[in-house]
Structures are given as C-alpha cells and as structure tokens.
Image 1 (tube, rainbow, N blue to C red):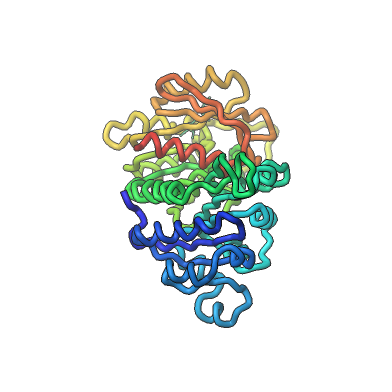
Image 2 (cartoon, rainbow, N blue to C red):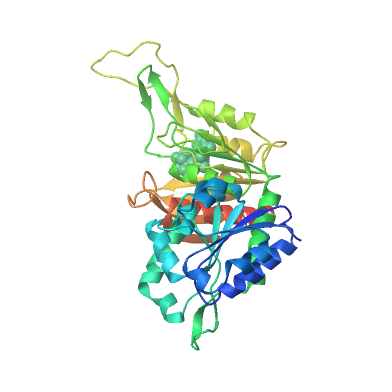
Length: 399
Ligand code: CTP
C-alpha cells in the first residue's frame, strides 16, 4: 500500500558515488504522490547536477546556507518545518561524523540539526570506511540521537572492493519509509496511557512519603508512543521533567489522584503503568504542620493497586496492559508472581539495587516477562532507546 500520497519529503543528497541512485529515489517518491524538496551538499554537486534534480523533483534545489535567495524563499528552519520527514541518501562517512558532533557548517547539516522531524539516513561508503572504529563510534552516537539508519547493504562497490557499505537500493529505502508511514497511520487510531514518576503521600501540609523514581523511563515511553503516532496521555507524579509536546499530560500528587486520573482517561488500547506508586497512604492527613514530639507513629492504609484494578476491569480493560516491577532481588520469581497476581499482559522488570540503571539514571536494563511465560532480556541502553524497543514490541503486539 502506498503511504506517500501528499507527503512532503526533504531529501538531502551527500557527495558519494551512489548519489546517482538518489535521482531514482526522487522519481519513485514523485510517482507515489509525494512532494520532494532537495538539498545538495557541495560535494554532491560533483556527482549529480542541480538541473537533473530539479527536472525530476520539479522543485528548486537548495544548496547554499548563506544565499539571500534561498533564505528569502525558504530558510533553513522552514525547510525542516515544511517536511513530513527527512531522508539523507547517500549519507557519507563525513556527514555521519558531522552529525555525531552536531556540526552545522553547511545547509544540509544545519537543517538536520534544526529539524523537529524524523530523520532517515542511508549510509554509503567503502567497506573500510564503514568498518572503521571512528565510523562505528559515530554511528552509535547517531543511534542514541535517534536517527533511523537504513542499511547499508553488502555487495560489490563502485571502487572495486566487496563488503558492507553499499547504499540500500532506492526501492528498499522507499519500502522502509513506506512501512514507517504505514505504522504511523495505523497508530494514529490507537490510544495509549502511561503513568510515570513517584507519588507523594502527604503526612501534613509540608511533609510526604515518596520514593526515588525520576519518571524518566515513563516520559521516554510517552515520547516514543507519541512519535509513533499514538494519541498519548501521560499521568505524571511530581518530577523535574519537561512536558512532551503533543502529549496530554495530567499532573497528580497522590496514588489516589493517579488512580482517578487513570480511570477518567480509559478506554485506551495500551496502558503502560511505569509509575512507582506508593503502596500506602496516611490514613488521616493532618491539616496543620505536625509539631515535633518524642515519638511519632504513622497510621498507614493501603492504596488501590491501579495496575491490578485496570487489568481486572471487565469493560474498560485495555487490549494490552503493561506493568513494571522494580526489584532488588529474585527478579524473575517476583516478576512472574506480579504478572499472574495483577493479571497484566507483560511485566517489565528492572534491578533497582544497581545504581547505574533504574531510578534517576539515564540508562536501564530490563527483562520483559510475557503472559505466555516467555521472557526476554533487553541489554543496558539509554532509557530513550529502551522506550523505542518497548514501543516497537507494543506496535507489533497490537497489530
Ligand atoms: N502499581 C500500581 N498501583 C499501586 C502499586 C503499584 O499501579 N498502588 C503498579 C506499578 O506502576 C507497576 C507495578 O504495579 O507497574 C508494580 O509495582 P511495584 O512497586 O514493583 O510492585 P508492588 O505491587 O507495589 O509490589 P512490591 O512493592 O511488594 O514489590
């Protein structure tokens, strides 16, 4: 199915021998009903001419950051805002290196740095360049920055050598992006709800019981769901994190407020309950600040378990209910127990005794326990990347 109809694609062509294949990319995109604006880097013009690009795209070619004419017509910010997505094909080793440091010394790199859109890179270079540790390092950085990398393929190279580094064929690049657009369209009809952060259970007007949760993993999940097209609601306990553009956010303090906000925002297709909800609340919150005494007892009562409640809800149960388990020991045993007792579909477990992952860290390492008793371990990675991994699995499960 063609998902390119009326899509606006900004194609950036860098200087490599496979730049000639970019003309085919333009042709295929136009045939599928997309509008294509193109930026040529200085060295790309050694391989393809602006005239051939203009003839195929039927659009002016952009090439110079400091041109009055370009900036008057469409400046470097508007170019990225105009597009639905950006494709860089071919992406040379030099461009990969520049993007890994955020350098912006020409129009192409400036537009990419200033972009708020999904960016696809199709690398193409000699096998030795591709395998060089510096390229590998740079590429890892780009993956962390959430660029989408397509290919490269293995095969005979223009330079006569053989190996990995060939740009993926235009039709494959188009299929890859078409798939991304298809998922986006499908997901636009789907609703997601995420709970994140700690809760504050007040003792008196100035004191509360809480925990070490930063909310980072939940926010990254909401961000990734939104990016993948889901209509996303984030119910957040008190955190220091910034709201996510396009995500409906409801800020709460206590577990009780989180419970009510969750119910008010059902039904959804997927609920990911990543919040570290306090298990107990103070039975009688003091209206006035409690004065110091020799001894003090807190009278606690149990909070409602939100995950348990919605997993067992007859009419409003989301198709997919995912819980988290913060454990310090017996991770597998405790997670499987939670999975069964709370009747959810997956439990994502992490070891919070390790300070390099979990609470407040930017990294996480988790195991996912599935209802069918299978489980898988996802290695240590940035919380943002882990969120992408989890959302990828959510999409495939919902589809
Ligand atoms: N959870 C919830 N409501 C609660 C307590 C927990 O929705 N009142 C959810 C959390 O958001 C998480 C999962 O339940 O998705 C497991 O939370 P965790 O604190 O690890 O487990 P508990 O059930 O509280 O068990 P324990 O503290 O004994 O490990």
